[in-house]
Length: 424
Length: 102
Image 1: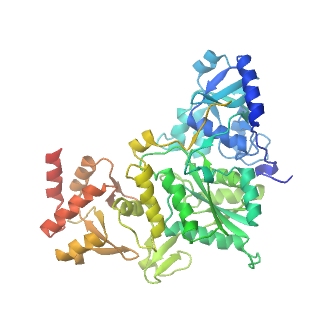
Image 2: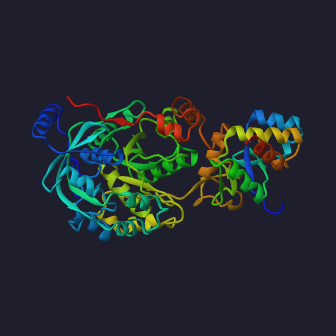
Image 3: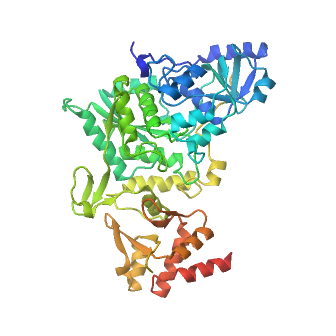
């Protein structure tokens, strides 16, 4: 197997070639196949499934998988580590109105256009409180992942997905959508033997830059240094936005600017995106990220403090502990990162595990950086690179109605990251 | 004022020149790698009024212990008041002016 993904399974794209898809669509229409419109979250997960981001999954989970994932953090095969249920929810009313049954072949549509074929093999209910408790460790609705779970409709459909109509990735984002098989080709072309993932939903300050540089050094380890063979892949999570988040354009372009402006280079840095609505599941989300990045062809994954956490639900190193507990069943090596900070005594960005001027440390705070950006004040280059700040402010003007942060106006008027166009 | 809940106004060159002209440059403190900040003190009562007047703002109790996410134009008005009064004790007057406007 050339392209081995998570769980030791080969990555296979479930994307029908265009001519075959047009023909198949005509057949489905002629046969009056049942049609189901889907919302953005489901559409993005259909795309992820079809391109192999979620390998070994080939479709939405059946009850057996959901149960096993919740209770054992493994798929129903009992072996493959999987931490977050990937489910297709539907209301009882919709189920009845569309007369959907097991073994139906349903045409999924998004914004009125054909998206994928869904071969339904299971229709089931599941206790949402149990999902919340097992996946998020809490049943409190104020946890955003729990809230999402409770908002699911009452029934779930399981079965395989075949993409009929690939998404058109809209400008700004297009060069950064690099599905697993293509990503692996790019890594080969670059000659990278080890690649470490940097998960992000932020614009980078120098603390993030040094997280990447530190992880790059960790990943390099004992490899020969005559020519560059280790890279950092920034993999931005692009999904549901909340007011106050950085706008997607600023996130992706500012990370790429670190390479363009020479803080990294083509020889060791690449920026990409994955469509996914963050669940903020902390440790379980970290395990999910490990699987996702394995499929993208990465060998190492950086995990900092409170990875993918929210509020005070998880301890700062819970994710590290959970990853260590399943390490033997993962095909990616975690690199655990300590915090980077600015030390005025050293006059440089340093690491809490290295510097001993504890009383003088100036720690990075996302809120503080946002406060500086809101004021339109260019931070010192030791805190944020001037080129990064400039591109963030440029994105604010071009895409954010003057703000680098998500506003109601941005949510209403933004160009979607992808569109599904008519097929044919 | 035993406990204060500051509003951080970050100082660029333009703001620093105004502070210098008003003889207040010494009030700006270094916060991050040489970047200066003017911390405008608020009492708990003033903090609550500000958060009510500007719902997009929040008090960051976890990390910075300051009132954050105020729009730039709001901070500009507070800063202008500091320069005008040559004092950091401006929040009552600022809140009063905003309450009148609303």
